Length: 307
Ligand code: PLP
Image (cartoon, rainbow, N blue to C red; front, side):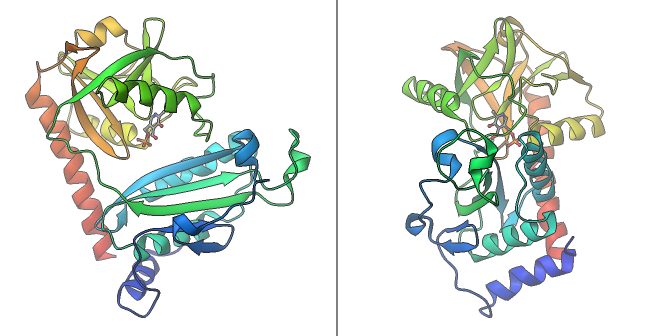
């Protein structure tokens, strides 16, 4: 594992002019780097034919990739679950991500890593995939969803497959749900299997009821969100009871507060679902959770600067 000192050294070497120049965005594919608009990938990469790959994504604040190790650990876990061997050890990938982050001008950015099974003629079995998996990454300017506004969502039956715990690049259902939400002027789609709420198209959804933070348990029906885990840990630290137990659509509609979390949404309060007002009954508690989320980011940035 690279030491914290060397991580900082990599960043400052690049920032102080000794390294590469700042750029608007940067992408990486199997050892090549360049502006994302100029990168070319082979048509035979199995991403194109099968979506045969996994990914992870995080955000930077003040150039610091937030919860980097948590996201990279999940990236390797997703790869294990689909038997893809990421062609770089954890420490080297960590260093690569830090280098890429350091080269991008914008202090807030989205950081994306992806591994696909490799490049080879179209054929379902792994043996067509070539020698080595492909490694992709990019860093591009983006901002966190603000926590001081209210969000609107739609609901939709969750018709995804039964491996939602794996962060695969097969995102067609999420694309369709997101489009449906946008077409209705909403920010997210909340998914449910029958009455049971699972998660959103690209975030986890939670409720507050009688002072308790309730969220779906980590099984094969949801992605184990890194942000979800951080909010749970913080609530426990603050003495807020946490219940990892499924809740229904009706319970959500009647909850004191409803909110979603993801790497780009630390704790976003939902005030309308399918055109019906929701939440708004425990503003003090949700604001407390939001403040704790922001404090955690600030502490992480400070800790990074000290290393
Ligand atoms: N659920 C789904 C389906 C997602 O795509 C995401 C994020 O991309 C999340 C939950 C939230 O995960 P995280 O907090 O790790 O970003």
